[in-house]
Length: 204
Image 1 (cartoon, helix red, strand yellow):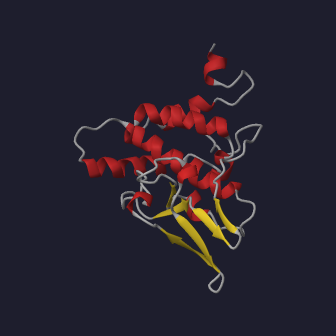
Image 2 (cartoon, rainbow, N blue to C red; image 1 turned 135 degrees about the vertical axis):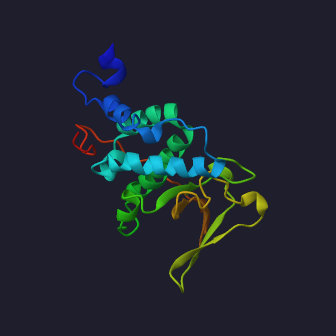
C-alpha cells in the first residue's frame, strides 16, 4: 500500500519523502502573528525555499508526477504557496518550455526565482473561459512586436498573484490574436511529461 500511495510504484523515486522533508522545516510552521501582507510574502519565501531544493527546474516542470506531489504537500501546509508554485512552475514555466515556435529564451532568472512567473488568462467578466477571451494582441509589423489591448473593464486580467508581493513578476498573457486574415484565439499548452528517474532533485 505504501508503494501505491507514496512511491508511484515500488520502482519509482520516493517523491513524497522528498517534498515531505522540504515542507518540514521551521519556515513552513504555521504562524498566527503575521499580517495579511506578511503572509503573502511568506508564501513567496516558502516558494523560493522549495526552489532551492530543485537541481534542475526545467526537469521538474517536465515531470507531472513530481509537480503533483509538490502540490499535494504544499497544499497541506499553505494553500497560497501551492497556488503560486502551480502558477509559476506549471502555467508559466511550462508554457514557455512547451513553446517550440518562438525564439529561444533565457529562463535563468525564472529558474532561480529572481523573477516569479504568472499566467494571465482569467478575465474579470469571463473567469477562465478561454473561448470568451476579449484581450486582444495585435501584431505591429513596423515595430515587430505585439500590442496588447483591453477593450473594456470586463476584459481586465484578474489573477491572484499579480501584486507587488514576492518581488518582480513576468507573465504569459492569453489573448485573442489579430492577424491579416482574421482572428484566432491563442492557446497556452501544459508541459509535456517526462519518464525515468528524477533528475530535477538535489542530492539529500
